[in-house]
Image (cartoon, rainbow over all chains, first blue to last red; front, side):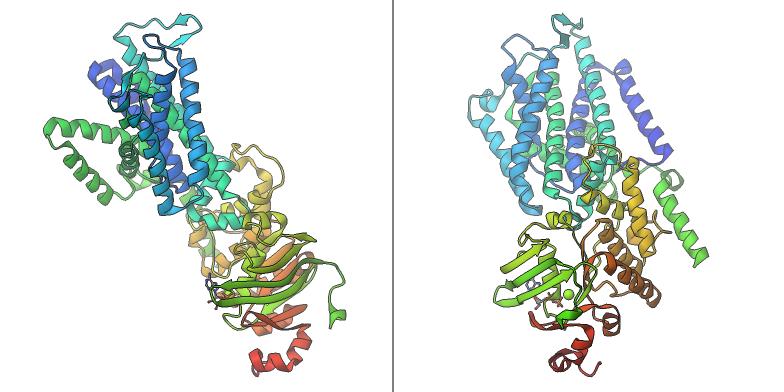
Length: 336
Length: 255
Ligand SMILES: Nc1ncnc2c1ncn2[C@@H]1O[C@H](COP(=O)(O)OP(=O)(O)O)[C@@H](O)[C@H]1O
Ligand SMILES: [Mg+2]
């Protein structure tokens, strides 16, 4: 899951710096596109905690993302932005609460059934906003963006600076999310998730109540998806049911698949590539989805470890673990 | 016969334990008891219901009928993870490990699973020195002290069997259920395991399922013979060896 080699870490750091420098030389349009890519990366990364880390494939993850965005809409009075210090915790809490309920019920099933139950829950949330006037119905609704303010003081930003601030906030949150997940995966809790992914039955036989651990992971993933959903509302100032639907959940899965199932940076790379690909496909053709589909198919078939698995020569990929096993194997040979 | 039995109170007892699979009665009215410091071997031909019995004792499957008492407490039907935490540890007949994790991590997880101490779950796993030490001790005991950093999937079949037992030991069990631990082990590894088993039997209540009759008769304190789900006979190894019914039904001309 984690980049073990120094070279890998340096590459990731360089990537983060590049993303940080982007608004300095990019046109406003690309800054906004970048923000969208970063938000997608947060969504994919939050889902990776379930898919790649725990082995739980959910098709309803966008429900928590969309619910967070709608929460921002619902608590924001018309024409009057609310401080992010209120909207962000509220959106994240709403997403986490929904994840607790959905997870508690859906985690009683496994495999294909889990996939279907999460899909059903996601569609239920979708139709709540699609078929009622709660959030503007099918058409969606505009909202006043959350403000970067504390008490009565607001960060003084011009109209042109605001999207850049949202970009950097998204980047900061994405990096914070990545680092938190790195710590989680190294923790006692994270090791249990990995054990569940590899062999859940054995984990139960070892004495782990795996249901509780999976539920905790599901809720954390929901909370993180809530961060992404909040940033979407802040970025676009608009919500609609498409945010929630299974289509968005499937996109997040595709990003993970493209970037790589076995790493934490994979979904980030996958989300950036997916967004870039969508933009590029739109430029060159009217059949955007077809081109997208073909490229994704190619990536998934040609690169079993996804985009994050390429570009590193063998010596750079060497990690302490394989070093250790190689050494142990050599020792075994000399002693045996 | 009973006078040869360990004097201690039973740690685990079953009363008329039964399990059906559809029309098949895999285990039928089995009553037995496991005592501290005793190695209790269960033998019987393939399909006799030995693994099913262990699966019920360890909580993997629910009994259809009957009772299981662990230190006087009724535990039949408890989920497997709770049985482990209550002190029933088992190894699997078919190797059941985490191939993509290191040998140490396989055993460390076992120690983590049962630790009673309240810990911050978000603490880095490698800072929990007591768990790692426990893992190393268990690996040392089964003879895998030298390969802790290797990935479990790269171990030989015999070494994986040893790892399986180390994982069970790291869970601090009071009752050890060992389902054919020797299957697939080389002679040298078997030898080591034999002495390990004898040592373990002093500290635990051990239920051992094993096909190698020489081995069973050498290590068992008490034996239960099963056939077609039911107990055919029970007694000391000497009594079982002399039992005419067992002779005929199972041992053949072995003894
Ligand atoms: N999960 C199951 N479903 C149906 N039948 C089973 C199952 N597990 C075991 N059995 C049957 O129960 C009987 C006892 O099996 P088992 O306990 O594995 O025997 P042993 O371990 O003594 O060889 C066999 O006839 C087996 O086919
Ligand atoms: Mg068996």
